[in-house]
Image (tube, rainbow, N blue to C red):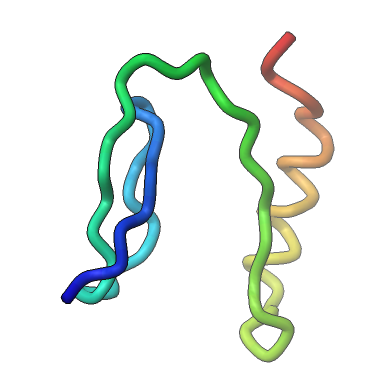
Length: 61
């Protein structure tokens, strides 16, 4: 049986796991997202992406 995971309607599925079912919630305000990764997966590309995200700053008011 899949694990339900509520998701904003504007959000995109980020996990390829078949045991997680995304359930869109259509009447929520936009949500802030955070960037996270497994330490053992960290590499130059992830660090560069994190720098760009930090440089852009918050996109929601």
